[in-house]
Image (cartoon, rainbow, N blue to C red; front, side, top):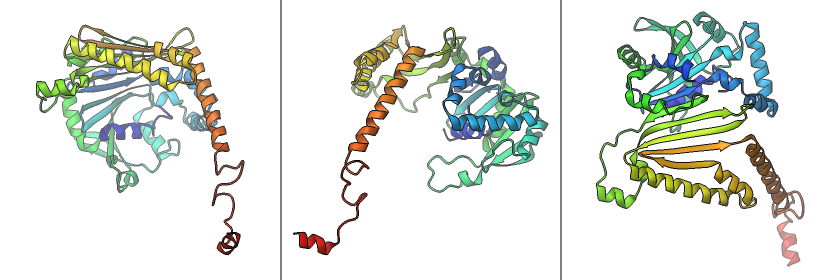
Length: 365
C-alpha cells in the first residue's frame, strides 16, 4: 500500500491531474506474478465532457491547467503527450510499479525536469545506472522523513525507459527485483487475471482486476459460520468505470466478484442490495423520490459463483444529486448562521462580545 501511494503521488508530478487495446501493449511489461492491475486511458479521460466541465466549474483548476499548457507549448508539447495510457500493478503488498505510454522522449523528459515546466514540489532527481540501465532517481527527503507519518513515502523512486515511448516507474529498493520478473514472463500468462479482464467492458476508461490474497491461516468452519463474513469468500474480480451515452455524460460502474461458491455469492448479493435500498432511503430523507432513484440505479445479482453489480448514473440523475447537495449545503449554512455564536442574533458567551469585568458581574448580583 505504501508503494502504491508513493507511485500515485510521484505520478501526479508528471500528469496535471490524473483501454483495452492500448493497455494490452503495456501489459507485456507487467510481471506474470502480479496480483493487481489498475489501467487508465488518460487521453480518453482528458477528452471527455466531464473533464471540460470540471475545468469550467473550478477556476483554480482551469488557471493551473492553462499555465501548465503554456509551459508545455513552449516546449512543443501538450498535456496529453505526458502520459497517454497507464498500468499500475503490484506483486504483493510491498512491491508495486507503473508502466506509462508517453509522447515525451527520454531526452525531452530530462530537459523538462531541469526546467520549471513540471512542478516537482520539492522532489529532487539525479541520473544513475542500475544493472546496466540508465535511470532517473527521484528523491523527496522532506516527505520521506516527516516524523509521525504512518504511511511515509519511500525516499527514492526510479524511472527508466523500456522503449522510446514506454516508461517504467517503481521504488528503488524493488527495482532490480521488478526487472528480473519482467524478463521471465508477463501478466498475459496469468490466467486468473486475464480471465477477470474478460469481464471489462470495451468502453471502460478506468478498470482494475485483482486476485484476493490467500489467508495465511484458514478460520475453522464453525468460526467462519458464526462470524458470517461473506467477504472472506472473495477470490478476486474486476471493477470498471465508463462514460457512456450519446454525449458520454452518463456514468456506469461495473463490478464482478469471483466467490468460492454459489451460496456466498447469493448471500453477498442479497445483503448488498438490501443495504443499498435502506442506505439510499436514509441518506435522502428530505427527498424520498430521489432516494428511490438512487437505489434503483444500483443493480446487484448473483450469477453462479459470481456477484455482479452495476451502477448507472444518468446525466439527469447527476444533475438532481448536484442540486440536492447544493440545497443541503445552503440549508446547513442558514442553520449555522442562526445557531448561538453566529454573526446574527445575540453573540455567544466569550465569542463576538467582551466579557464584563468580574467586579461588575458581582455588583449586578
